[in-house]
Image (cartoon, rainbow, N blue to C red; front, top):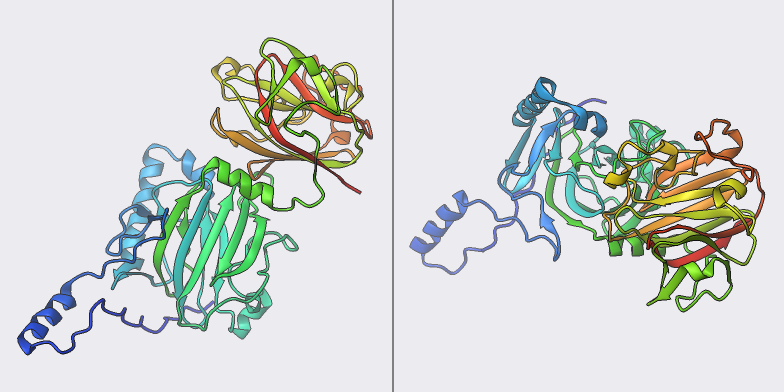
Length: 453
């Protein structure tokens, strides 16, 4: 696309008007205002400003690259990468009247800090043929462009800004739900809520993306990194930014956000008072204050007394240091859940020192024990509640942990098992749902299941 320079920014309004003042005082005040920097607007309550209105403190220039590769840079390679970014920043980025201005070229403006679950607010303004975006966790992107430009229509610009444009075709969120852009040359406001891979976007107070997964553009086989920087994209056209602020979302709030989306059809199977409707080793669990807790030093499987074929299960769990438990999937009601059921999905503090160097990848949290390895690094710190959704359809199992898909496996295609494990029930079509305790006081709450057609 051709580079088009946007019209000069409209001068920001001064905080004071000079009216009805003696000429000498008015002249002095005019001189002061002409050289005094404009103070940025205070961020919303609970937010931290990412731009101080005068310089790039807290930011650096970074050429676009897979954030996992950036994190892996060491020594001279890392020094050169950062040096090149710094030089690009000086050439192509500036601050004018309390506004960040980029000429459309150079490295992306990148936060020094990496973020996990956040709420981000930012104002932007583009000119004719403007084209840019915001990278979350170093991954493209929340799209920004000139929705009126005819030559962009074939790319979907006529559907408006705010979509997850780099998602695969047909994925939810790729196209905005509504056109919410203001006329070209006016300021727009984006509000982005991200929990794990799940992203909701408001553009000018209109929801344009609703809790969609942001695909990993760099490698579709991997989930997004657990943490990564926020980046402002350069894309051949001048763009202006202001009012950038972020709020880190705490675990309990993040779990509530996840639980509030797509919750239709889920039925509670644990009332928080006792184990009515459950069978198996019920003596190995306690119920207190709405929490189901495995007893220390004993093991056994407890299961809900209703058979399920295809289903989705939602729950929260909290691990003690080194804690070990498991979800019994299509369990027959007797014996070992991992051997006789379809599988046992690991619930495990897999980062604990006791497991260092001792785990087969198919033993990590979220894995189908001995069968399929889940991606690691997405558990919350020990002592915090995690939110997990497990979906079983036919021979496939997906696990979404704290908003990030960590397992997507078809067990019917697996022939390589962890050494020493048996999986006689791997191809079961139905069974019970339960918990396989392993001596540790792992806690569960909010347990609900939805039967799938």
